[in-house]
Length: 114
Length: 114
Picture: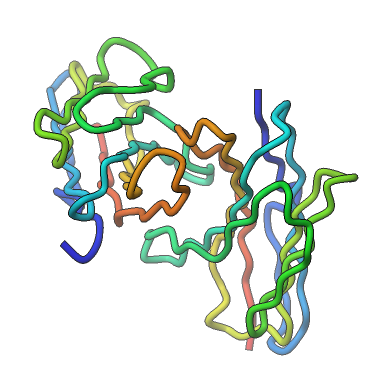
């Protein structure tokens, strides 16, 4: 596609529920990144994929968070047993390859845990 | 560890004033990239500029200019003759050569009043 697409744009869920957030990167981009942006803060790195593999997942806050990219294109960020503190905007970015530095960001998914 | 500091949380100016947004960074790498992004109310991060650590030449793009000084670890952004449409949150970010993540500052909320 022309840009990075994230769905849904908004998600409201109850505490304790499981959610999945989807990112569709720019076609051909091998590098994909997830960030989390809390209100009034800068985006914080969560995980980076190069192709199908998670090359760096050191930003995931705990084991309730997991992300996959099985075919090296679309990625899904999965959050189990959601907590109110997980409420944030989850941003996805892609770039042509690692080290290219030409990151393109999606519009994000605003997650609200009530 | 890398760190980006944007000491100005909020700036308010009147249209046509010049405004400078400050950015100070910390990194142990000798090769790195610095970025500025704009985040309008719509939420999408808009790329403005990328600079590598070996290129200290200042850059001008229309009303925007950037001053990179390695000696003070600063990468400041100036908007000349500001306009209401410049109102947004501006983020400075740093990427080390691994290319696996961006480290963002906390952002500066710029409000340009008519």
